[in-house]
Every structure is written in C-alpha cells, then in structure tokens.
Image 1 (cartoon, rainbow, N blue to C red):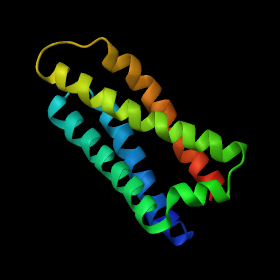
Image 2: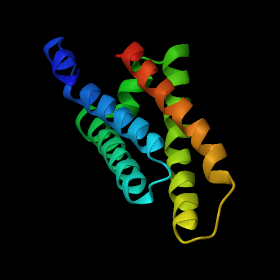
Image 3: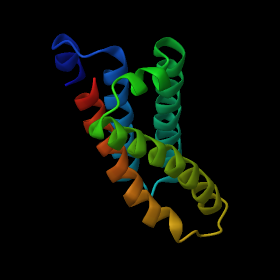
Image 4: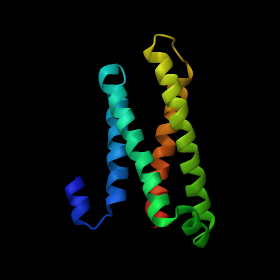
Length: 128
C-alpha cells in the first residue's frame, strides 16, 4: 500500500505520517502484549516528533501556517497540538501501566488519541 501511495506522488512526510498511523493501529491491535505494544507506539511517537521537528526546521511551520491561516488550518493546528499533548499523557500513563500501577486514563485518553491522530492525518492532507 505504501509503495502505491509513493508512486501516486505523496511526499516523504505524508508517507511517514501514514507509517506512524499504521504503527498506532498495529500497537492498538496488540495492546495486551506489552512487549509489542510499547515499541510500536514509541516508534510512532518518534516518527511523529521527527515530522514536527522537520516541518519546523525546513519549512518554518509556524510562519507557513500564518501565511495560510484559515478555518481549516486552525482546526489542523488545534488537532496537532492536542495529539502532542495526548502523546505525553499516553506515555506517562503507559509507563505507569508497564510498572504495574494501572492507570484508568490510559485507555480513555488512548481512544481520544487515536481519533485525534487520524484527524491530524486527514487535515494534513487538506491543508497542504
């Protein structure tokens, strides 16, 4: 599937974003197997963080967003910010779970995280 998308002309960053989303879906699918779930989710986070850093360094994301500011860009920025916050929540509560201190927030915020991350993916295609 990724090869087909690459041939279709998607940028490297959009492909990486799709890979991160695929890793998230795989991570959710194996959530009861910590030894798989944790590395998959951390890889997705590392990819997403790398994308954010790359966009800011190479494109000046904040300045570029200001230039294209409109309702859709505002929605994309809000979703992207919430995704980064939820990543932090998921990592903290995931560490608690891995150490045996069950966090009831991990599942609840995890659902919101997945929905918001895919909202981020969709809006990223719409604003560029």
